[in-house]
Length: 330
Image (cartoon, rainbow, N blue to C red):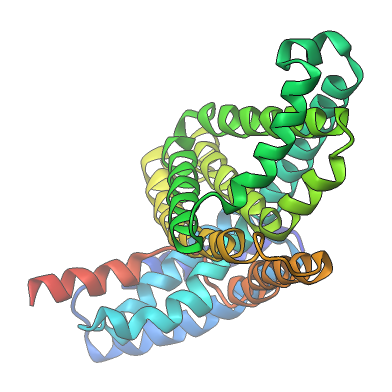
C-alpha cells in the first residue's frame, strides 16, 4: 500500500469524520453521515494497520474514530460498565503499540547485565572491591535468605509497592528521555554485578534459580514501563502530523493505561516472589509457575493486543475519561 496516496484519496472522508466527531448536536442527516463515515473509517484503518502497521495517519484516524464512536454511543454514566472494554481492548492495544520498544529494551538490558556479570566474575580486582572471599560467601547466603526473611504477604506487599513505584516513575519521567534509560541501565548493572558475585563463589545456579520464578514477569514489566516512558518522549520529539501538545496528550493517555496494567502485572510477579519462590517445591514447578504467568502476559500483549489494535483501538482513554467526568458531574 502507498500510504501517502491512500491517505490523499480518503483525506476528505477523514476530515469529515473528524468534523462530525467534534460536534455536540446532530441533524438526522448528520447522524447518518457520522455512522457511515465511522464504518468506512474503521475498514480503512484496518487496511492501514494490516498492511503498513503503525503510522501517523493511522493514529489520527483511530483518534477520530474513537471520538465518533463516543458521539453515537454516548458515555456510560457507570464507569464500571466500561471496565470490560478497558481490559479486553484498550489496555492490550496500548501494550501492543510498544511491543518492539519493549523487546529492544529487554535485549539491551540482558546484554548489559551479562557483560557486567562477566566483568565482575573474571576480574579479581573488581571482586576485591566488592568484598573478601568470606564476605562474598556471606552474600550468597543473604541472597538466598532474602526471599524468606519476611512473611509471604508482607514480602509481596513490599516488592509490589517498590516495583510499581519504579514503573510509574519510568513512565512519568519518560518525557525527559533520560530517566528511563538511567533506571534501566542502573538495574542492569546491579543485576549483572550480583550475578557476577554469585558466580565467583560457585553459586550462579542459585542466582538463576531464585530469580527465575518471579523475575521473568517482573523484569519484563519494568522493560515495558521503560518502553512506555520512551514512547512518551518520542511523541514529543516526532509528533508527526500532530502538534506536540496533541501528541503528548494522546500518548500520555495511552501510557496511563499502561500504568494500570503494569500495576496488576507487578502484583502477579510479587505474589510469585512472595508466595512461590520461598517454597520447598521442586525448582521446575516454581519456575514453571513463573513461566506460565509470564507467558500469559505475553499472550495478552502480543495476541489479544494485536486483535484490539487492528480493530481500531489505540489504548487512548478518551471514552473512559468522558464516562468518569459524566459520573462526577451527575
